Length: 205
Image (cartoon, rainbow, N blue to C red; front, side, top):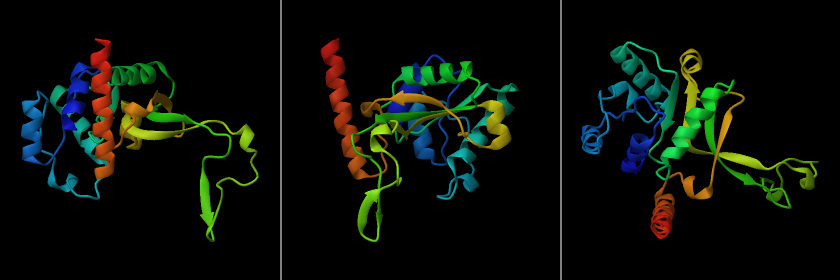
């Protein structure tokens, strides 16, 4: 999955720099063989299960700005657990955020809208509408984070240490490009989608 993310970053045209952050020497060596920059080994205190992505991104930003001596404009997080991501998605994310007055961007999947409310809750063993008293026919479509791309303007990120904000620029991605691998079943779905995409691209060529 790391290879797909590296390749997407390499082919994107709107990224000034990109790097792979890890505390694992084997992962770093593998990333280097794929042509990725690995300018540091992530410190041990940033290598526990409790560490948030925000902390590793902040460390990478501080390191790179210390090396280059120049501040970046936008920080982008590409998680390798979302392997089906095109370079055009990355470029579009940077472009949309740069021209917007908003401070962050997130990729989402959707829209989701059905005749009946799609969100339900279970109370005392009963399945019922998540939002009581709302007319289902009037519901707006909703969207869900797909975890593929998060981006934030540099000054906001440094000040707030957040990649999200109350209002965000949306980057809508289709179901094919919204696979997020958290378990073995997700991996099987991702493999099936990758096979489908490979065949589709080949057929168009």
